[in-house]
Image: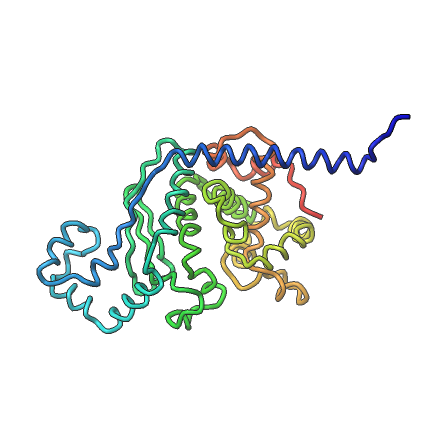
Length: 326
């Protein structure tokens, strides 16, 4: 007498097999990437400047010439360092960032991933600074130098950030440093000469987020898109509705200048102009959908990362075979 397994059981078994094989491949990839060992040493300029003396200012300027404008004298820099507000800034940064080892490890891991996907990548100097809480420029990336303004990562409830909108304050914590760094590198790698339509914008940010999937896999998906977990859950649960809204209202190829403000740019919520939806939704849902389109494209096509980052948005969309979650 023969015994047959139920079809449902076989499907579950097949899914588990695929998952195990996939996890094994990912583990092997991560081991291979870790061997690249970019090995950085973060330079704490913020501390060096906070303790600089009249005798040491010239040496500090020689070591970090790009940090000192020639328009200002040594007396100006020494007076700035002694300013009471600057002293308070130094104190708060030193308390939150008494050590930097964990973040340094994360940055090294990100650089290892960058080196794997781009063998021409050269490890830059990584330098921490204070920047008078200029949160719009909290990370600066060049070919040779990375500047990280630590006073923009003191924790989203820090008293320094009281006048900053809540949806922006959410990102002002130390866990966000490698995410912001990955974003800046994504901007350097992506070539997309025009962003005229909503779809252009969606694919551009989808490229950014997919880039982060690969270079900071040790950060959660919610962290990569700078969402609270509940916001990401909402986007997933409503993915089909969001997509239908875009399609039925013919928004994808629209060049209406208001659309980025509604669905792409940082905001407390997305603007569907529907009372029951707007207050519940997270902002930047156009970015989220663009992310899913790019993921579908990479899943259904044999394309290298660098090639995808330079691909035309329309071609990515047409060849993605994207279907929203239901």
